[in-house]
Length: 329
Ligand code: NDP
Ligand code: DGY
Image (cartoon, rainbow, N blue to C red):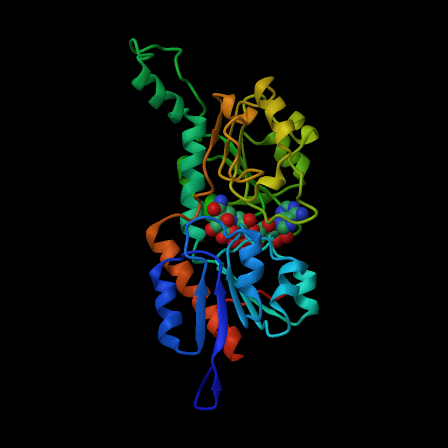
């Protein structure tokens, strides 16, 4: 348990993570790592067992880190490092009360997530999944002037809800497509929005004037269910709705109604409630809804860098030094 006078600390990792992160932890020689050695979510009972007495916890967005987990960990726990930028899966008040430090992975996944958002927006607006199916099932009979038409970005108004790191990276990528107006909403105006000629507007203005509404805000009590019936009613009938933030920002029953009644044109979602979305979910019956399995940050290099960062955050938390990315809350 000790090397010289240094105590070896116990760490629990809730999933198989990229080797880049594991290597950093094993080479550091300051902790004994136990791992839920699977690609699937750790069962709750195993999480509670694995975390018992741990000094450090490396978790994922699919692990609910609440009072029960913190109690199971006990007073040794110094640091929680999450392999994500989102932290809505963690009971921050309880964590703060116990003086536990938190590391997360901002910035390193911004480009990958913005890129995926643009890909989803184009796939949804230009109906790529429907086209692919038609080619395979024989529905492609000839070139038809009125077939599989969608919506283009050129000359359009795009509204970004939450112009943070990812929102801004999305805006930067969309502008060169010929976007005419770039609107954004959030709690405060951003000076850096000038780079994309972003106009800070009330949410209602954004929703009613945008041809593309892109949600990239954090999930908080204020944003939970933000995109509901009232929201969709204000959107244009020709508007495209894209969400790559968290599923719970959207009321999915209201979205289903909006899509099936023609209230809005189409939607692309990288995030849902729950995840995975059950295969018999009504949204999956709609041609005008494209659903992806939460792959915003899923490039090999990004996931490797996220693993490195979360390992380094964990080590710093164990050793009481500065973290590369500490969440201040
Ligand atoms: P940031 O903290 O940089 O940005 C979050 C944005 O949310 C801020 O601009 C903030 O605006 C906005 N926001 C907070 N509260 C509200 C509100 N009440 N109304 C409107 N906007 C609000 O985070 P990132 O850009 O790095 O990440 C954003 C989110 O994206 C993450 O929290 C995560 O949920 C999600 N994500 C999803 C991924 C995926 O795989 N699909 C990958 C990575 C992240 P303001 O500053 O004005 O308060
Ligand atoms: C995050 O980091 O919050 C994403 O949802 C996954 O990368």
